[in-house]
Length: 380
Ligand code: NDP
Ligand code: MG
Image (cartoon, rainbow, N blue to C red; front, side):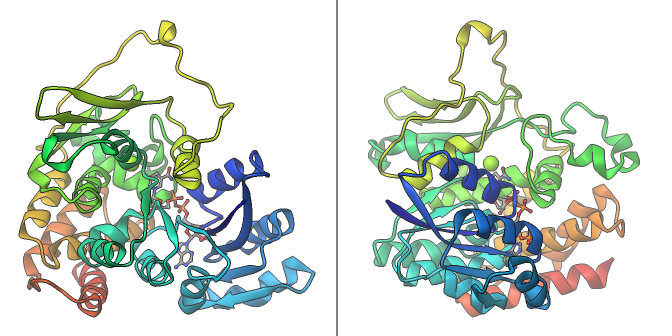
């Protein structure tokens, strides 16, 4: 039985993960659950899965959680509590499904404790990719990507030598605005922006999918996870979302990974790794697929993608600055304080003011995280 901790259990990935675990009770035991402030759902999950430990990021909700739980239960509090549960002694694997840069320190904590990591939180790897990957390498910690494209690439290249890889095709649907005229972007309601054509996800990643920032962050994420220059990673739009990424090898072969878009498939792979367990989720019925199409992304309409390539090429703290500025700008957009197109233009403005730090330490990355978020607030 694999003992699992889920950070962000009340979110979209976290709930899907608990769904996978509920269907495989003989394979997993939940030993820890963590969330930020959704105490009602966390309490329901605790009653059902009976973890030894709970952690709550927002400590102002601590008493509410105790009240919801009714029975006594050990609860860790605040950011330190989340880091502590990420290194829980009895855990075998930590699923990091927190959103945003709050994921950085828990990932580091799990690595220090030599836990296997199922990584959904892309913001940590975008901001602190070099540090995280080098710490994981030196401690022989396995990081299994949960993000569907990266999970696919991970499976495609498992048997391949790095020198045989020519190119990665990072797939994307194009998001909810692919076929919408840019002239009306700022007239659309947030509910329209959040309505992804394929995936049901948390708000932050849904907005990122609409700006295409998500795909840009994923390019940086892939470059760290697979140790490749961003020039080797090409974004390819595939609206049907059947192929979840492809790897081109130097001899001309292309390896692809296919499944109906359902996050429970990559989550299940990551949690079970290196085993596979049978799933009852629908398998692809090729006789029903009418069309498989590909398009190149429109960089003029969606400037976020090029901004991410540029930040990745500049290295240092540019990716961290871009990521944190975006996180804050998305927050302000969701609060109605800036327009939709204001998200990327704000990120661009903050990046232009950023003084790069070459080969940053973790503290310097955390400093840039704060600086970029403050800078967004100042400039809006
Ligand atoms: P959600 O917004 O749905 O969920 C976020 C989760 O993180 C919630 O459980 C939330 O708790 C918790 N959380 C947020 N901040 C903190 C904090 N400071 N401390 C502790 N817990 C915190 O996000 P998603 O599930 O959509 O995404 C999670 C991550 O996975 C993101 O990085 C995203 O990019 C990535 N991802 C998501 C995919 C998806 O299908 N959703 C696909 C690929 C990647 P609470 O509910 O209490 O606020
Ligand atoms: Mg993805």
